[in-house]
Amino acid sequence: MRIGELAEATGTTTKTLRFYEEAGLLPPAHRASNGYRDYGPDAVTRLDFIRRGRAAGLTLAQIREVIDIRDAGQTPCSHVHDLLTIRLTDIDRQIADLQGLRATVARLCHEAGRAEPAACDAEDVCRYL
Image 1 (spheres, one colour):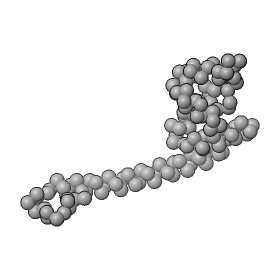
Image 2 (cartoon, helix red, strand yellow):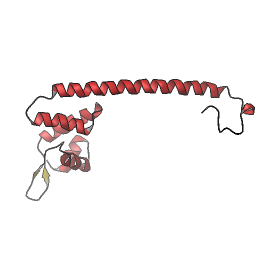
Image 3 (cartoon, helix red, strand yellow):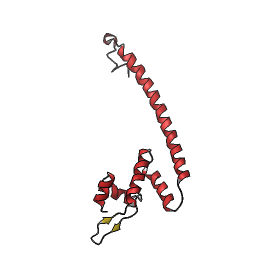
Image 4 (cartoon, rainbow, N blue to C red):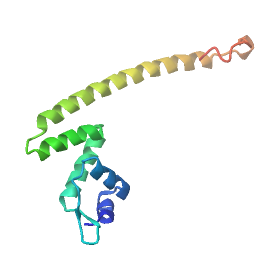
């Protein structure tokens, strides 16, 4: 299938497909006699994997590592497990950071809600931030 057909079939853009090919995420497409890229059905499967990896929060570099392992004929399961463990740790840290931020903003919001404009110091922009 041509690049435009692949892009339409997978909900991506031709620019993204060219980038993925250049980055090694997609194998180089066969070139027809007219120079057009001609992708096989395996490209759809590969793009679906890339989309699922991105949805899990993996970087393109991490996804390429997994693809490289598979392309070398090995199973990437343990590597994927390691990547997902790291990703889960990162998500837990981000959640903790956001919970701390929420508590700070809630406290500031509560304090600002009891503001008395007449008591504000003209030298301060706002004492609640």
